[in-house]
Image (cartoon, rainbow, N blue to C red; front, side):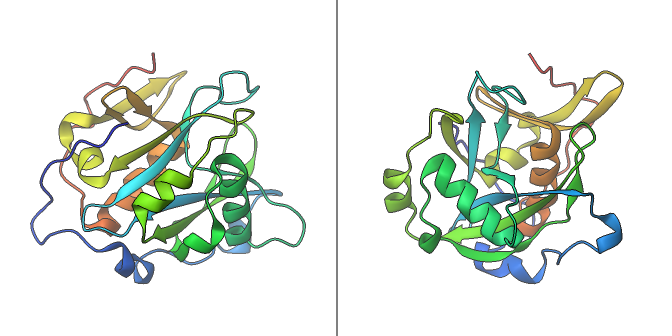
Length: 208
């Protein structure tokens, strides 16, 4: 489980309870595609919060073995928050009643599958109890990881992925590789938490 940490930037970290005033609201309708999804970014209630990631099951037809936040497609009548909470329960048995919704990050559209994805931020207070209660659904999830914000912000764990003419931010914390949409969301989250640090975008992080 990746949990290493380093110091924060000047000014200190932002408690998870304060990020709701900085996270963005819903995306304008003009930016939303015809397919909708949401993910849940789960934070522990600490100055250096732990963030929940999952590694998708190897047998899945899409994004097998990749690191992600719990989430999936929206069902009729659901809000993005309801979708994110339902998917987190289905994938890792995270009790929706244990999560306090804090806000949203900017919505993102996936190029390949044409989904509009809403990242929902949620805080959990009793992190030890929550950790004990989690159980990965083997149909969807191979692993559960908690990674501290300080580890993600550490410049030695950051870089850029490149694949098929595309590129973006990436993280490599111990053996856990985070790239693609999930890394983009993580990059947006860190400044909100007060854990952003200068890093070298020219540093290449291979995808295998």
